[in-house]
Length: 203
Image (tube, rainbow, N blue to C red; front, side):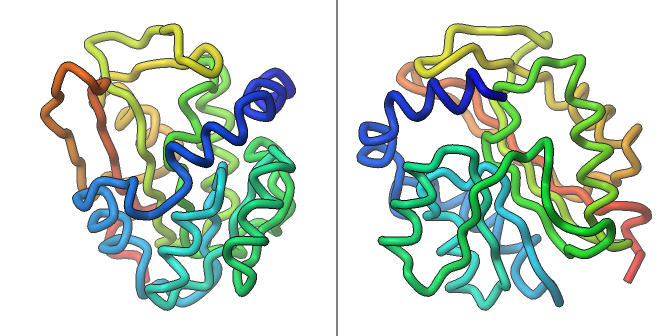
């Protein structure tokens, strides 16, 4: 992930200006995140939290949210802008939390730069972090096939929603909601999936 850290570091100020506030997030996305991660009885990790705005949104809903990002500039901004929050420097591929110690994970566009061969390993690590019945919410770019595209920061990947759901299932997750949004010419196709680790009826 070193190349991803370097790429985002080079555009950190611009990225913060463009995306670093809750009002830059679509209302449907905020609602989905709230439905599945608010009310969880323990820590929720916002992995790849960027400027920290979604971590702050979760905390405003009463969630014990912890933001984690590998870009020092993002963590510094998050701590300065949301001084009551909990923001930590780290990588989503090496998360410094004990197995089974969190009740939710938000991975909002933080997996888009993950090469497809590496995704299964990362999803399995998410499962190890989550307590039984823990929730995962993923935001991603959609496409008809799995494929790379020239993202403005660094190479990213599109996923057909069904293929990503199948990868989640193979990692032990049960999908509980899917959001696909109609696209205007100025935006890439968007998808989000909420899933439970293990059976959806787990406590």
